[in-house]
Length: 156
Length: 269
Image (cartoon, rainbow over the protein chains, first blue to last red):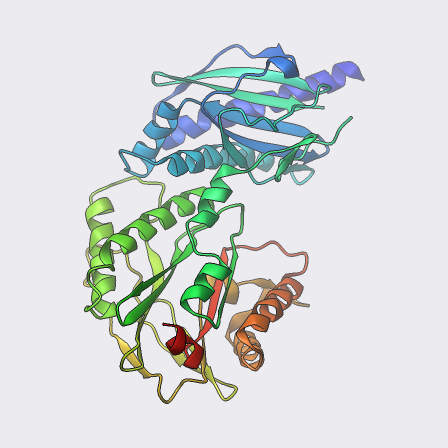
């Protein structure tokens, strides 16, 4: 049973990795490099400048977030929208957009029992943010152009 | 095992969605709108946490402007576009109050064109339906220009549609854009209620057969609602739309602004 849950968890993580890779490959035409995923304790989770986070419910419960430095979102905004000096609000919206598209693509693969929330977007690490201690958390490092980011998947 | 949700709360804590906060602080709320137009209400329901519908109010000497726009798409990219439109409107209208609304639409369109006209492969759709209301207080006249956004007038319980021109602004840059300004005499129409709304209202899926609200039901809704005071209309329309939608998912952002330009407006101006 535990083995099967572990396999499911890893398969879900792989879907997120593929979804993120596709996002950059298809939409920016520049490949991203995904690092080796590692398990992390909830107390050690890293957040970069801006984060877009999606809740997962249905058969699996948990969350996924994409967290990156300001420069990566600025770069994406410049490519997608042509704004060279985006505002803080633009960057927050970009973080929400990427997390929404990535999670939406995973949902398309896993079907109706894999439900996702609308994204919640924030800057830095809000004090109110508390991760549940009893979820397995995979951190997937990501490099796109010169930017480093994290895709973090936490599932029961 | 704690349940993990992210729609505003995460575990035990509550995290503010900063993108949502930014979106809503971009537009005046009901109280701020009523300071400008005493008999008015606004219902703004983005499909997700943020959306592509927006509005702007501006008071100048002897006139008042109300601009409402519905950017293509929805979600975070459309929300970015609402900021771009808001900033362009803010930089175009003040100081140019002598212009007719149709000229303003062209100016806004040209600015979007200069910003995005030469960009390719963008994810962002730049077009918008837009309505510009200008109220000339001294002569008690209202000017209206719409690009794919009609102005609905209900007088004595009957709906009259002040038609918009059919071409959006901020899109189809190779085509010639032209808009007309409609003049409404407020001396004769002081009791009328006016409504501007985004596509998402008419296209709201619901009812017993999961159909769009459509023009006929919208007409009934506005005609019935107009019999109430503006302060009560917000609740009435909100309740109706909530019941109509039921458990169906919204497919677009929905925005409606209702207003009356009668004595309280002129007295307070």
